[in-house]
Image (spheres, rainbow over the protein chains, first blue to last red):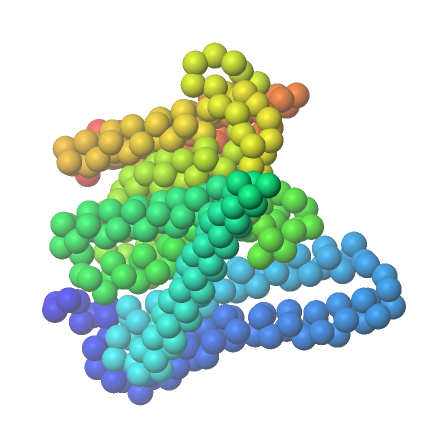
Length: 137
Length: 228
């Protein structure tokens, strides 16, 4: 990417570092804060409603709306960190944050694949045992 | 069958995003930039797919329980390409071209998952290739294999896109979107879910894509005429 120094900041300019750090903090807030708030909301209101013995359609709708908003904030957080990596490639905070997001994404993917494989194996075992029962019967 | 659906859904993402990486690499886009675009677009596809279902259900279904919607994934991908184009404005048109080209490939493979699972099934039909189901998702039939028809159509559209891309045709994006929107709109009438509805939500979204593609084609023709 030589010759693109005007567009992409290769030097550690203090102002650029500060801007990049602000974007990184904003990204962290966008990605993690909605999740934390959702969890706290469930703890406070979800548990309370369960104890009172009432299910609230309104709670479900609000929970759904907050969940949808959380998704948009997640996308905004990813966009911000990618912006920092492209425009300020030397920023350390941006590098570390990008790696954190990559590791989290890989862990989620591995968990999904493990769950898939476990379900497949469980179904195959059930089918075999059912066939076994049928032949014994 | 549910697991096969999940495997094919995963495979559709892996195959299409890998194809996009290869096509971008062949056009000498830096590897780091390809990675950032794939990362952003995969997040946008997954979030878009889930969010569409959540919104269509009136927010009664939460993120984890919402099934992925193909149109939602497509909208998510387009959002991802747009956002990445704002960050990395060099070769933005190339990114649009490549990701829109692999969109029918992604859809075609994921529809095979729907075919095996029984979701998004067709209207009652007992002609050739009719299919009946007896699994957790669906018991009944015979139905028209609309998922298979969609899969074949969209894989064919992907091949057309590859051909146009190889010929460096400027109309790759609008052509692929026009063909996808037309195919999806038409085949929607053969789905059981469409019974009793004149124009479904999916068809309304297809019409929007169709109009956008016509507008893009018009812009392209005009700029060609003006010699830009």
